[in-house]
Image 1 (tube, rainbow, N blue to C red):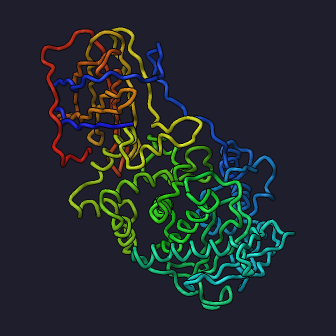
Image 2 (cartoon, helix red, strand yellow):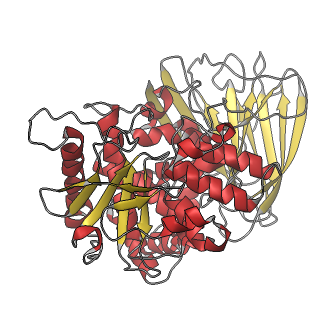
Image 3 (cartoon, rainbow, N blue to C red):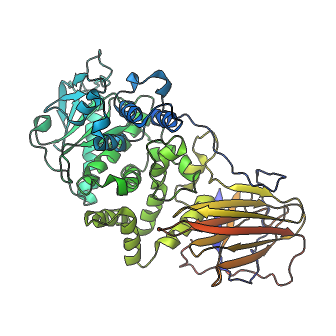
Length: 548
């Protein structure tokens, strides 16, 4: 679908406006005859084991100790979980779970505590205490990695044994070896990140060890020591069977191998910089998910995990799920990769590098982002406004991919809908978390009329009005930010609000651009069949506007 997107000048208090358009639009809306406003809920997708465990914990069925131990098992040996917590949906990355377990060793079972230290060579201890010997290993061509694996058919950890070139090494292992070397070349040699340190003779030699075992996750990265620059190792799934489909030309199994390698290897890089997980974990996962798409842009596996992010605009940008999460919140940081990707498309891949460089100097991820944007002559508030508009209009480079992905329902930002049927006023009072947003989708009745929008905020809230002039073949939007006066009051009058067009729908976006405190706002929207004589056109904002 073609898209056009105009950005209008900010409207000051007292001004009124007509967002010019002659387009006819055919859209399906959620409508209601009630004054109450109801949010659109997302479709129910299968919960993975971590989400099922989180749901049980939040409802009081299990305590934190049991939940933590089950979460470890969900990553390392999901087949040992009670049936009620088993799921075919994989965990994106097991790294955060094992970091949480590391912080709470005193709560782990003896079997799980043994997981937190690997054996010297090629033995991995699984959740039930069983020591699995990965009797074979393979050194990658560029001699960066030693891959430990087994072909023992009696073990669920066995890799696929197909060996088309008859060299005694399973094709799966050779393919993964090439993938890992390529990931190293991009992330270390091209992007300039520091390589993980040598681990001496752990895993037989000084190479970075990669263990292939049956997991309930794509993989995880673990630290041998307690400080940044400690040695690390990676664990990846042994066959990537049953993982979500992706767009990799060589098939979804290979695509999963690619993104898991890029994602988990970037964690080995991150652990050389910081172990301050509580402050930076959201950025660790968001940037690791971004880099898998940067290294392998043809795969688009990350799109499997972004729907919940679009469905939770009321969450802060830097949200990381609590121990008892279930549903969309569990995947939120992976969806934040959409924003990271967008920022690198604007400012280059060096933007992520510079953030991590600041974190190395003891800045938090959020402070590093703010300071880096300031140094580049922009600010986070404007970037957040742009983000919230783009989440509605899908004006991302991969926007068409997001909207055509094979979800049960198309991805859409969550909004509160209301359909006017006669002249009336609806009101809402909102409290927004830091860097969060709320969307109201206002649908027009028959006949020409105008829509009057007014609000009173507290200084932290931005109000953006989007006139939707889309047709069945073209997506089009007129966008304006309504600026408040010194008392934080603002208003705008929009004519052309009609089921006959040009605006069958107007979306009001409330945005808290503060990183420090929540914000409160009172919103009023009134429909009238009388068009004010004072209504006038909104000029298009200059091309250098922050909302693009």
